[in-house]
Length: 281
Length: 282
Image (cartoon, rainbow over all chains, first blue to last red; front, side, top):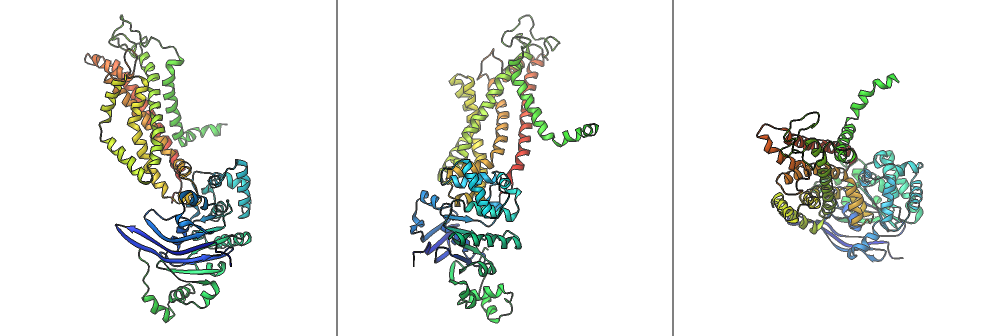
């Protein structure tokens, strides 16, 4: 077996607040292979977003990190700012939850492509325009000239998330991290965007780390899944295995809740009473 | 055509904001350029000893002052001196204050810069400036520097406040995730989202500078007589006020008043425009 594309080993994250520290991630370890889609599920505050953000160094300044993150055999956790910048965007793409938030309201879409591309390499305006148009076509946008000349507020939610995806792909990253990429979109558009994301990832041999709270999405799109609760990974494995034979009570509760029978199963109910919601979520 | 003509009032009203800005700009520009473009009725620097303290008339529109200067000519000549200094001072403080504010919006260095600026604001700036100008000699350049010293911290503070908010926005986070350098983020994402308020502040700073220049010249530091300045003219005019001869001080005061109102109108117009640019920042 080849070395994994991404290896997270014993990751701890603490947030300092009012002089006290709170452990947000506790000994999180997992790895991802090439051309794999890994789902990261859990309720709000379980640490799934923090895990995803730690990988590209997007922790808020109050957070401190220990443990090791290896990407392509490079240790990201002690890389200098320069190396980290070239990895971000260049080798790891990031798609955030709210596409309108992720796009700068006062810059044209073309300018935003140009900003991301020029952060990594020299390119002329014509090169950028051609590349951006190609990327937009790849995410299913036909009227590329109009979109490139336009601004974020002129786009629909689905279009905006396609644009964000295209921008994230503009430097051909090996890994894409998507933090609840479709939560802000309506149901039918969610499907389209996720289908598109999966097709692009699998066709190009990339990998996708998909953060979501939606088990249906996990079942439909992921190869493997990691279930998180209170800053720990409870279990990780093939989607089929985890869904059919959940080893952990929390996973079972989560699956039951998704199936709409959360109040029916006695076992689950018994577990629930001992299962406080995560504070501050 | 008659149909479209009847819509004219509504059209003008709907665009009153832009129109006000335009009118205000024309007024300011006209004041600056009039003494250069047209020949003034009398020399602004050569007094006529035979016509001292004359009230406004067809010959001397604004009257003459205690030395026999034509007030109208001097008000216009002073405009070509005061306004460019005010605008230059405002631009210099913009060029200094914006980078300082952007730099101060992040990290430990930022906190240090802001504490220095805080310490600065505890000093009686205007008095220091008066002393400094007196020592430097009081050329137009000295006054530009003085205005920049007064206004730079304001720009820095304003830009910093805006930048701190913008830096926590999602699109700055996305830019970091895409590997953008701090400089690129500062220019493309922070500055481009705050230049509206910077323009507003620049206009207000110019209005404020008009007042500062007038104050300096009124106090007798800065540009020396017989070169006319509005502040200097008001000072000279006050000697006539006691005798009820109001015109020598009133007309330069009116000029200051109108210019400040015009600059504020421009600032309001830009602000209304800039609000539309802000967009969704969540």
